[in-house]
Image 1 (tube, rainbow, N blue to C red):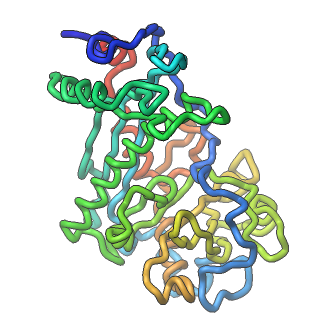
Image 2: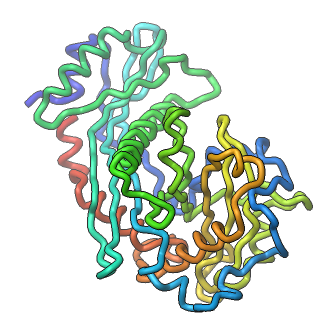
Length: 373
């Protein structure tokens, strides 16, 4: 069987210089999942919660059933979506425009797990994966005709590869080409996640009482505007988040707000509003673990996010009841947890952890994958 880089060289004629695969994925478990949020776009004091009361709010106070937040039979959550990737720098090439550019390749995956309300057991509901190779295009890379020919050939392989093209709109001097390549691989991974969202929606499986939890943000920017309804019953939960965003009127960074106010399990902030690429979101922060049992002040706090869709939501925000019910369901996902298995354990929701573990178990080993290149 030919190797991918041999096929790239034969089809496009570029000068390739292979590299013994270097993993370019970050091993830092504290990289924010909301890194795309631009602090300059956040307007302090903008709320997405109608009739917001005193701050902070504890979602367990006033509950007639104090154990409600731990009753999975009454949870609003039934499906959990996670995407993962494993990416390598595998070669560098000299383009016809005299640029020296990286070639990246990787495995991408998206999985949905669902939990039975009767037994509490979690099983894999849907899984999709792909192998990808990222190549430069546009005026400074490989011409589109050659890339199309290459894609047609690689799709016919027994282990097919998808070609993702970076730099097709230019490669600014201010940006690292490898960062552009990784961003394109992330987009390909998000396409797999969007396919899962579309499938769940078309099968009418999600509702206000059988919601989907997404690991990270719900900024699915590749979903067409007319299909934003796919996110109606979707909640994003970020284990790590930017601490320098300013949501409150007193202009304090959110990290300073959280460390001083979210002291007890069940404490949450108001729901704040921010906008990103013509979409409006409600976002709030919730403490799911006792601060005394974690090693950092903000450990045990997660960021929750929901897209505002209806005109009523856009004008007035979400109701406090909706925010509290989602928060209570989130509290119910704390146990069991991967104590000691992951530095992010205080912020993990266990079904998401299972989705991550399943996907990594399905990826080819590093040596096996690199042999394909």
